[in-house]
Amino acid sequence: MDFMKLKEAAKKIVDMEVRGAAKIARFAAETLLEYAKSLEGDFDGEMRKAAEILLNTRPTAVSLYNAINYVMQYSGNTADEKREDLIRRAEEFIRWVDAAKKEIGKIGVRRIKDSSTILTHCNSSAALSIIKEAHKAGKDIEVFATESRPRLQGHITVKELRKEEIPVTLIVDSAVRYFMRDIDYVIVGADAITVNGALVNKIGTSQIALAANEFRVPFMVAAETYKFSPKTLAGETVVIEERSPEEVAPKELLSLGVEVRNPAFDITPRRYIDLIVTEIGAIPPEMAYLVIKERFGFELPTEEELTLMPEHYD
Ligand code: RUB
Image 1 (cartoon, rainbow, N blue to C red):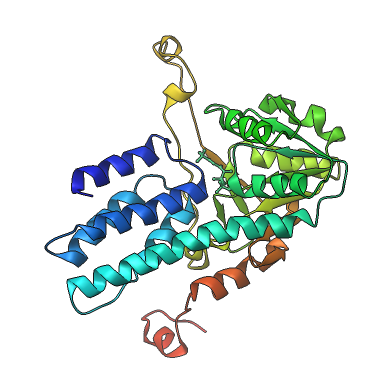
Image 2 (image 1 turned 180 degrees about the vertical axis):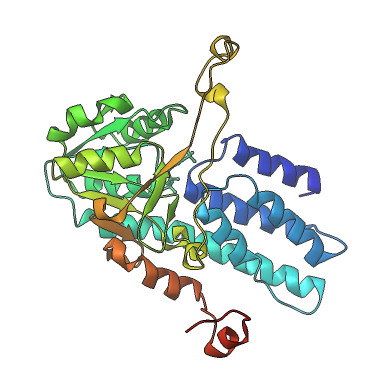
């Protein structure tokens, strides 16, 4: 893969031809792998440039950051050794993505009772892994899927579910509360989980969580551990991507000077989340900190480093 092809790959993420946090992360690892294969010249410098380009495609998906970080921690003395190690790490990450999705299905299915109605939002491969597993296990389930304006990822969801012959009803986003009394579980995916257990997911998720809370419907999140944000442990907040007004309003309206805001994601506080199903277990959101510490080996500054800081107060 040459530099032009790398830029084309990055554009596929920007244009949402490749979308959804897991798919983006997997695709970024694959792209780095392909780019490294044929790279000549300054290996470290060129790889860093490639990583930077991919990182700047979609800001909210922490999976992208974690994927790139994982792959870029390669080592070696020569360019060939570094390439070999990078390829090994990328393949390892890709295996993690695939295995985690399956495992989430197996763990999540134990939470689903027979004869239940599940509501899902947007198109999450992790959430659908649980739903498909429940169907495979012979549980009599049906799904309500929101259309997920403005990009209508709900259409992808209903097609995927019908392919498995799972009964599904498509609803507009604003009908969620209207139908909540008929719902047994809400299951959504995640673009990011913060250190305090909050969920960042498709815009509208937090409203669904409010309605679920009102009707005492369990609200479950399906999230691989590579969606947990190590940066939030260091005090950073997750950046919410705002997409173009054209996704929401036709040119004719925009030409009247109508202002449009189009945030792609929102934040659901942990008090509305009953359970996060990860590949290492079904955990309460309060455990997000431990997952980040364990999975990403995030090191807090040592006592010594702290005392070296100019303005350190006990
Ligand atoms: C997709 C979205 C999904 C998560 C999880 O947003 O919000 O719920 O990314 O998906 P977009 P998955 O369509 O804007 O990328 O479980 O497949 O990682």
